[in-house]
Image (cartoon, rainbow, N blue to C red; front, side):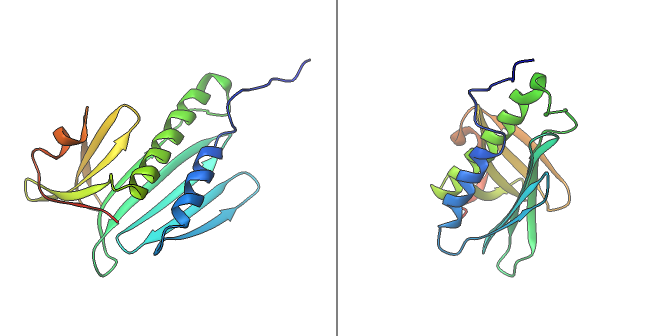
Length: 165
């Protein structure tokens, strides 16, 4: 039986490169935990925390949390491959899509594209998707989201928007 070859980089390679870039930013700390099957990146900055998990055979995901000035959790959002068996070629596209969205978030953190503000008196966060922008509104424990085609529409209803650094 001939081995299968893929022209795509292994699941997790794009995340690893993006996290290295983010770790070079002043004030950002990256700790990496590696097990036999999983890599976990714990990213900390004064205004946010992000935990990224990569297990190429079963799960890719992240939790992103906005912090207040004392390090308390204000608002969280997560994105992952859910229960799809991403180790199967049939579902690798989904793992790649989630990985690309995590990389987009890291890119926007590096280049001023993540914003926090308020919508309807509740904390709000604007983060990138592959094909648009997601606005998350709520708290660290419970939030809702709505997707928009661009950043200006996502931020149109809110007030007090500022770049998350």
